[in-house]
Each structure stands twice: as structure tokens, then as C-alpha cells.
Length: 275
Image (cartoon, rainbow, N blue to C red):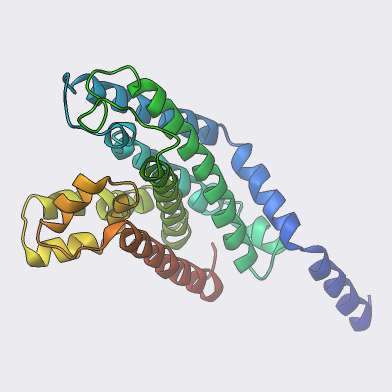
């Protein structure tokens, strides 16, 4: 084969690598793994179960809002979202298929982008299912509602904001997970780091309230919980010594973490050996 023929063949192969094909390939890889289905099902079930248990403790006349009960299963839901992301982000490195993947897509970054899109879509669907199950699980519990006994309502703008924020938070958590998986390339290391950022650091800082710890806590990715916090929860967070970010500010913090991890993971993917 002459050099001209080899060049034409290389160009043909590169043209064949399109964004939709890469996206379809990553979706097939993620959906074809048994652990993905189990993680999604476990996340939905755990979130709904925790919401039901916590809702059962709300006594008659309780001022706990229907929104806070419907989203109360988020601690387990966010763990499921992180696991989902880490498994997808580190799968190529953990299974050794990275060489085949990046031989087919030499530029590499389209693969990372497709993994982020696929993970975000799966996490959003999981979040919707988890929220729906949580609403159903807490609908019949005593004392749900804003002191008047009204449960979560589709017609209430605040309740709709909380539902959208819940889904967005789980999506952001899963995206952080997939990017940590791609960055660290080892499932255990990536999951440990993700849990430390989202859960452990937040709990340690919450146990030591103050202006400095409150500020650091607000700037952690777990600050994205403000996306679905009700008015009382937002006021409590603002009174804890940290900045009053509100729901929108919490979303911006989570988005900034996703962007930073995307840049780090993309840089390592391009500049370092994938093996």
C-alpha cells in the first residue's frame, strides 16, 4: 500500500468516527452491563425506601413539607448516582478495553463527551424515577405538608422546582462520578474520592459550624442539594455561617465542579497514556 493510499484510508476511517456513532457505542456499552441496571434499580429502591421510613416518623400536624419528605431519600440516591458514574467512567480502564476504544476513536475526547452525555441521561431518568417513587411512598404518611397537611403537589411552583432540582443534583453527581472515574481510572479510588467530596467532607464540616467551615461546605459539590431544598432548609443553611447561595447558587457550584473535573479528565486523557 502506497503512502497516498494509506493517507486516504486513514482519512476515511476518521470521517467514519462521528459523534452519533460514538454516542451510540457508549450507550450500548453502558446499557449492556448488568451492573448498570442493578445500580439504577437499587438507587430508585433505596431512595424511595428511605423517604418512606423518614416520612413515617412525621407525626400528625408536623410542619415538615411534602417537598422535604419527597427528597429525603437523596443521601442514598446520590451514592447510587456516584456509583453509576464511576462505573461508566472507569469501565474502559478497569476492563482493559481502553486500547480498543481509543484505537477506534483516536482523538479520545469524543469518547469522554459521549460518556458524560450517556451518564447524564441515565442519571436524569434514574432521578425522575427515584423522585416519583419517593412521592408515592410519602403520599400516605401522616403529617406531610406545610403545616396544613398538603402533600407534594404538581401544581405548586416550589414543588416543581424541588423536583427539577432533585433530578439536576443527581445528574450532576453522576457526571462528577464519571469524570472522576475517567480521571483516576480506578473504580475504588474514584468512588472513594467521590464519597469524600460529596458526603464525608460535608458531614465533617457540618459537625463543626462556623463562617470558614460553612463557606467551604457551601463550595463543595454537595452544595448542590440547595437545588431541591425548601425555604426552611435554605434558611437553615444560610444561618449556619456560610454564604447564602440559594438554589441557583448551589446549582452553579455543582456545575463548576463538573466543569473543573471535565477539564482535568480531558487533559489527562489527551496528554497521558491510556493504558
